[in-house]
Length: 113
Length: 113
Image (tube, rainbow over all chains, first blue to last red; front, side, top):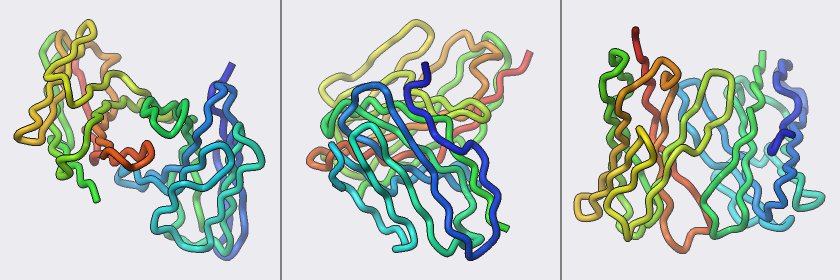
C-alpha cells in the first residue's frame, strides 16, 4: 500500500498549458504539503493544508492553486505553464501541524517545453 | 526566515569508511532537525531526527549530533555500504511555524567499492 501517492509520475507539456497534479495519502494524516525540487535538488515548500484549510502559502505565483477536497487529498493546479515551472513536485503529509515527521510521495517530474 | 546551509555538496567514500555531513541553521528558535535520504527517482525518506533538548541520537550506523550554541548539526554514517549512496538533506523547523521544514541544499553521497 502506497502511503502518499501522486499522479502522474511524469508530465510533459507545452508552455501556456494548464495542468494538474493529484496527491492522496492513506495514513490518516491531517496535514499535507507541496514541495518543489528544482534541477539543483533544492527542496522548497509551496503550500501546506491542515484538515482542508490552507495554513502555509509561500511566495508562489498565483498561477499555482492548491485544492484540498478532503484531508486525504491535496491537488495542485498550474495555469499558463512556463519553462521555469519545470521541476519535480513532491507531495507530503504529516500527522498534524505540530508533527514534523513528513512522509513524501515519489514525486511528479514536470517538464515544460 | 530560517536559512539552512549544508556541506559538502558531494562526498565520495570507500565502502566501510565513515561519512559526515554538516549543516548550519540561522534561526535560534528552531527546535527540530531531521535528516532525509533521497534515492534516485524517489521521494525523500526520513532516516533520523533530533530535537533541541538532545545533543546526540544514534540509530545503528547512523548518528546525529546537535550543537545549539553554534547552531550546527551533523549526520554521521559509519561502516558505509553501497546502498547508502543517495542524496541526503538536512532540515530545520522553527517553533511557532506550523510544521514548516526548511531544507539544506543536499549532499550527494557516493560509496565506492
